[in-house]
Amino acid sequence: EAEVAQSPRYKITEKSQAVAFWCDPISGHATLYWYRQILGQGPELLVQFQDESVVDDSQLPKDRFSAERLKGVDSTLKIQPAELGDSAMYLCASSLVGAGGHNEQFFGPGTRLTVL
Amino acid sequence: AQRVTQPEKLLSVFKGAPVELKCNYSYSGSPELFWYVQYSRQRLQLLLRHISRESIKGFTADLNKGETSFHLKKPFAQEEDSAMYYCALQNTGTASKLTFGTGTRLQVTL
Image (cartoon, rainbow over all chains, first blue to last red; front, top):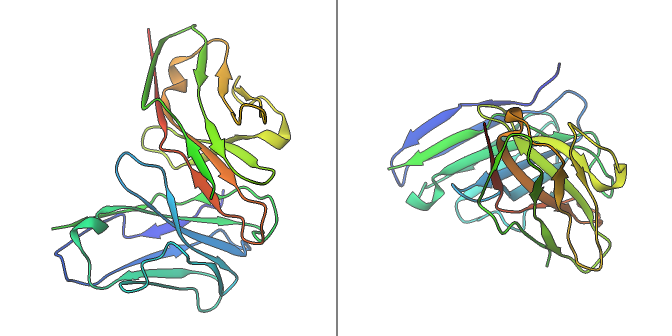
């Protein structure tokens, strides 16, 4: 069964360092989402792609976070520089169709980031 | 702005007892609501959606627009129901953004 893949699963870094997370969605899924989940809270959307285009990045802290999906397939989320408050689980999800549609989102296992 | 509230962080019930996980929402349009579940050491996955009006693993949820609620119910809890449950609301704009609640941990004990 196809699944969303993410790497690394765990990342420990020091503040002010740069980190990057990778996500490979289910093949054929046009929409890709990056969520941040702080301990004790629900996932919060950071950025949503429709193919290679960003359709929502209103909650992405753009001074330090960036995301790309150059060929409309896999995606990278980067943080530079990392801050203590960035410690969280970063989840990637994908769905068949996003815009205006009603489609199930399939989640990856997440990357747990710890900033020291 | 859309908002989802799950008032209970932890719900502990005995096996065979009824379960009700509460979810209230705030949204100006016509909402689409979901319940997602995360079992121990597994990924977050969709449990059910209100438009399907289906029962999954014995769980049902009815959208009550008057009370702006979407509570998840099961008549008889099973041990394997122990998990983290998230209520989520999807907007109906061009970007299908999901807004999650803070989650409720369901603990089913013998």
